[in-house]
Length: 132
Image 1 (cartoon, rainbow, N blue to C red):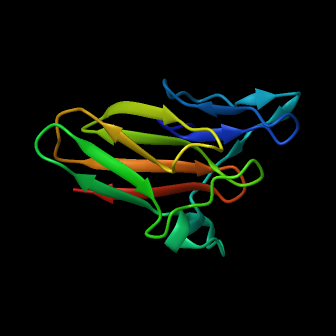
Image 2: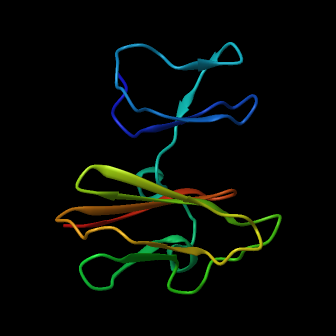
């Protein structure tokens, strides 16, 4: 059974799908079941949190800044942050990034009670930080 906002990847073509309406079925792409993408913490990965963990900075009542890593994540064609997603009290916001961008995004939205930031590194997967 899928859950809301889970991410699944096709190991054949690389498609990534986000669940926006959970159901009982199996997600399939290229004739094979898609694989649930877990955070490195959930997988006990050896990825470096110093350069991958989202850092959430609240600036006033209507601005949230997310940077990736206490030390900035590399942003090269070979290794970069593809996107940053912010969930505030269940509402989702996404910033897409390119290799030449800084590994950060500012969201001008009201600050809520529960804030979740996720980031996708093209090599080391999905990283998540939660503030409640």
